Image (cartoon, rainbow, N blue to C red):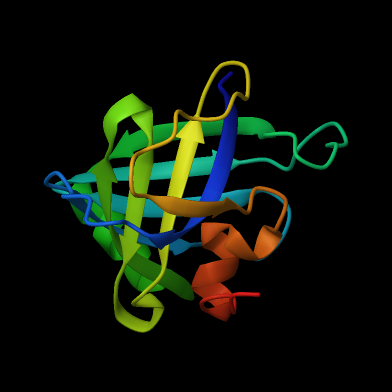
Length: 156
């Protein structure tokens, strides 16, 4: 069993940060409620992921902790499943120093940039010079599933 412990941030500015080469991700969702079933291509590889809701209540400001199972599948299967997905999104993922994953969205989600940080203890990432972000871990509108279905949440 895998436990994912993450924090999520909406990036307001990259402050001139030069992004390392990224990998293109196309992903779609195969269910509407309960367990999230996600299919994705990540570069030339295919994956099927099951994400379950958090099992215990979270305090405001705490990291998101939930069970996640990810399996590599044949890329052709992943592409076929993407074609069956009702809600999809496209992004490029860049790995930044300190383990921060930066997702730059494309298509109808153009302009949205999110950062995710996974850790064993739910800690905050080290600041990245020039990057301005606001934590959105507590806002479900920033889950990729919600974004794929509803679009980019308005900034408040």
